[in-house]
Image 1 (tube, helix red, strand yellow):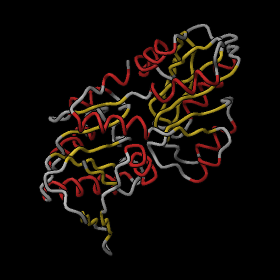
Image 2 (cartoon, rainbow, N blue to C red; image 1 turned 180 degrees about the vertical axis):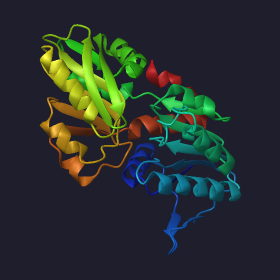
Image 3 (cartoon, rainbow, N blue to C red; image 1 turned 90 degrees about the horizontal axis):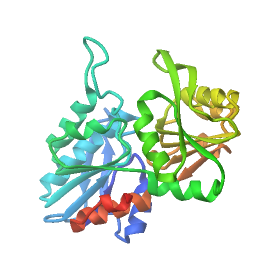
Image 4 (cartoon, rainbow, N blue to C red; image 1 turned 135 degrees about the vertical axis):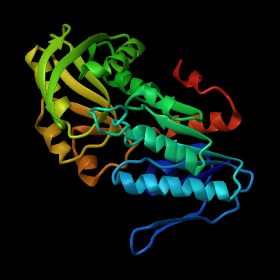
Length: 310
């Protein structure tokens, strides 16, 4: 088995390597003067089971191209099997046509990854589960429960908890999470006037006197979570915390979170955090290296991954 790291999140790649006790394979990833990406694997990988680790986060286009070029380089180096390990799958929000003349970019990226030479994909908490069907190769979509649940048990043991979906679209994810930790469920009903701006309309469910845990797959600008936290506090919630898998946190989101009614925001390290995010006292980052590492070793051994989530 060989592990190769892209440049999007080297700290996570190293943590996965440490967990598996498998050293990262040496690779040279360079940029030409015109910003073309060049990838060269510096070790023999012929006949190996290769896992290339790369989140397609900001800058998304650069990291997607690096992933595709690395897949091609690994395939041409005669690897036995190539698995694209994508902790955060960028472009996942473009999973359907939102207008008459708009793309389904998640499907396009899936086609590109397959064409580049990937034999299978290992990712985590896709924005929409149906994206798995965009691929014509096997896809393992990891759940974050084994990472978030111990944190919740440690900090909110024997307290009255309510899991809250910040929008109607996230109800399935929130319901599954609430079932995992045996908690009540509530829903934020909101109306989005335009992209990046949300207006909270109503809270469906009883949250008075409860510790509310907002659960979502990602946090971008933070506007939805901040508005939801305000609405929950107005309805009598005791505390509001948020658990979001992917911390995109663009456009000074950490400042909005600091000024909001949220007491804490817990994210994973699927995306390399900016210095300002790491320094924010309200934001806690949990590592998913053990979860991804365990999924990698199970893939290599052809054993069950679903057992991780029982």
